Image (cartoon, rainbow, N blue to C red; front, side, top):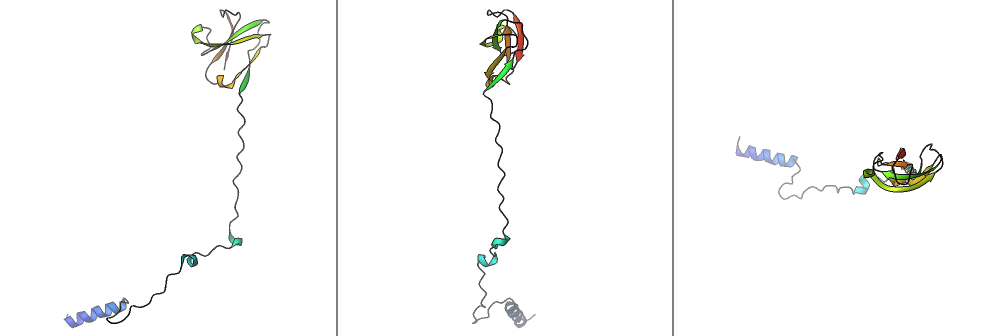
Amino acid sequence: MTRLAATALVVLALAACGTPRAGQAPPLREAAAPAQQLMPTPQADLAAPVIAAPARPQAPAVPTQMTVSLGALAAGTYTVHLHTICNGGTAFHITTIGFVSGSQPVLTLPAADFGKGWCLVVYTDPSATKVVAYRPL
């Protein structure tokens, strides 16, 4: 290929690509449309309705106290202790709850005492020598 033919091919290729020839101004391009024109604004009647999130139901109030029945006991007065396990041994003693009387005694205890594996131990006498009942919490 001659030098003249190669030059002619380059000129034709440049003309086809829109490259300006020597002495000519570059072609004008259309200005890009602003973003507002590319994304039309939705009309009010086409907008999806806003649905409010459902209200969460309130959790039930956590009781601060719970009542415990000690079962059927013979008539009398009993000492009640709180132990770490259902064992009458003093090594497992946490505290003395107090005294109950009657044949169907009940106690009201703090809710925090429940669910820990603790146990109520009911003694027949204040010296805590004879166990009459156990009540797991």
